[in-house]
Length: 389
Image (cartoon, rainbow, N blue to C red; front, side):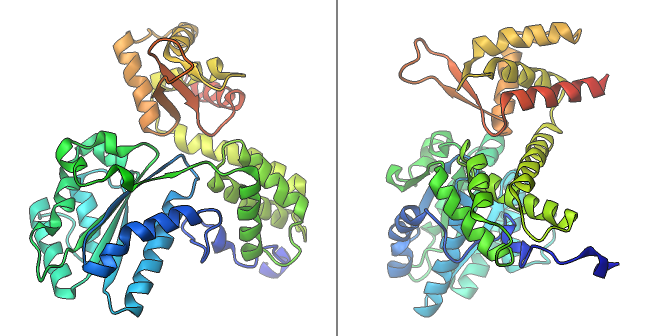
């Protein structure tokens, strides 16, 4: 049966995983250089450092932090400096106890998942670090989710971890990753440990940058000649609308899988177009599945209001929301509750909701769709609402 499948276009499909980190990150040299400059005191004087990485989805924040930490650990080993790192996704682990538990598990994989307070786990972590005489860089990915749910207390405790020094050594540095500027979410005590200059911004990738990234991943993932320049260009062009490298890599992998399904020896532009259609669907389903009915109605209103527009305002959306509720025989929520629905969608990363800036009269909130065309989103939400009936 396996023999009948035919030869795959893939050479190493794991290199298209979101968890895979290339040896060299394309077009993130400036951010890497700033991280190296910031964390030099960790190597030189055992002095802790903290950094905040900010940028939208698919701009390389997580990959850059991983590559940096891997390189820092390797450099430390060459210079007899014990450095280690641990990463926690705060969307998956959004409580203080679950975050610190995962960090403790880095050194003690069989540590029990209940029965210990946060203070006790921090003491255990300190003993592990003192025993190993290692400096640990903790990366909190999607840190805004933790801050929104649990506040700044754990961040404060971790940044103050070095106050009880042993032999002049500080044991923990922090890297916070978020789509939002989390410095604005920290309380004053926690924020005081982060310098504003330690914020590193990640802009969206350009078409040319995405083309380089796609070409690099294609060379790692596929057999020689399995995808031509036209295919690489189209993948980059599709993803360039959002400047999202994750989306580009997902399309690239799906295009290869479609080629394998057909038994094709090469990935054509038609495979890329088919992958784009599937990627839109998977992005939508994964983000929309947890939404309740009124969140979906609010998102439907955003989609309808956003057609042909770069952004819409809360006034636009609330009017469209009331119409959508009327169509579905639902009682529209009052303004305060509606605003809560908007904040939910922003927190979940489905839309971006920010205070208006220069060029927009009055004080209002600007809402933008992040990673799917308004027309496609409207169709998907409408179908989901129909299926609920």
